[in-house]
Structures are given as structure tokens and as C-alpha cells.
Length: 110
Ligand code: SF4
Ligand code: SF4
Image 1: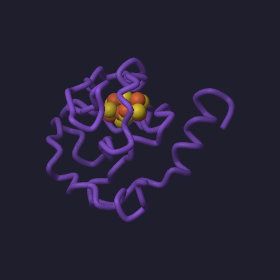
Image 2 (image 1 turned 90 degrees about the vertical axis):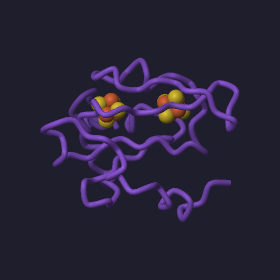
Image 3 (image 1 turned 120 degrees about the horizontal axis):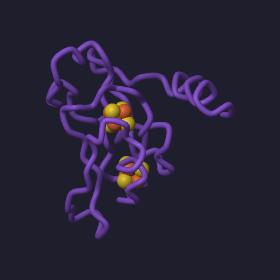
Image 4 (image 1 turned 135 degrees about the vertical axis):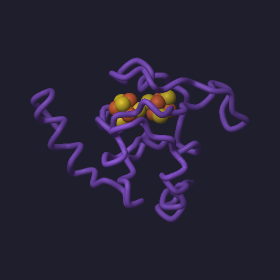
């Protein structure tokens, strides 16, 4: 089972390469242990910056985010397995309450 402590062990987001201009925004981070490789985020990411890579954790592979991530939250909203968290530039986790507000704005429901 993946604990909250495990989730909080996410690597320093500064290790994520950021494209110019996006350094002040959060960036998506896939939690490998939660990702099922379902590809939903690959389909919904507006920046097309998520791909599935091979992993010993999962025969479907797991999602990987590249440097084009704009921090839009869509993958974190859409992942059915809570396999994506958004990491602020200061290393803190973006509040999931923000995703819920965004979801309501985008789709009219929570
Ligand atoms: S939607 Fe979630 S579980 Fe599915 S591939 Fe993306 S991160 Fe993994
Ligand atoms: S936060 Fe937005 S741009 Fe970044 S990986 Fe997720 S869907 Fe793509």
C-alpha cells in the first residue's frame, strides 16, 4: 500500500526540467507506484508532454512527464488512480482543492 509518507517522498521538483517561462508554475509528477499505465493522461494532456515508458513496476508501463509541462493540472484531475501530483516550484504539493475548483469551472461538476 502506498502511504502518504511515500507520496511525500516525491523527488525534488527542481529535477524536472522546465521550459522557459514555466518555472513559476507547478509541474506534474507521476507517482510510479500508483500509475497503472492506463494512458488516460496521455490522451488528455493538452501539451502532449506525457508518454508511457517501460517499467518493471507495471507491464503496461508508467507515465512520464517531459519538460513541456505547463502545470495545467489536467492530468492530476483526470488520473483515476491519483497517480499524478502537482509540485509547486518551492517543492510543496499543490492543493488538490484547487483541482476541484478547476474541475467545476471546466466541466460543471466536481
Ligand atoms: S492517468 Fe494516471 S494511471 Fe493512467 S497512465 Fe496517467 S498517471 Fe498513470
Ligand atoms: S499538468 Fe497539464 S501540461 Fe503538465 S503533464 Fe499534466 S496535463 Fe500535461
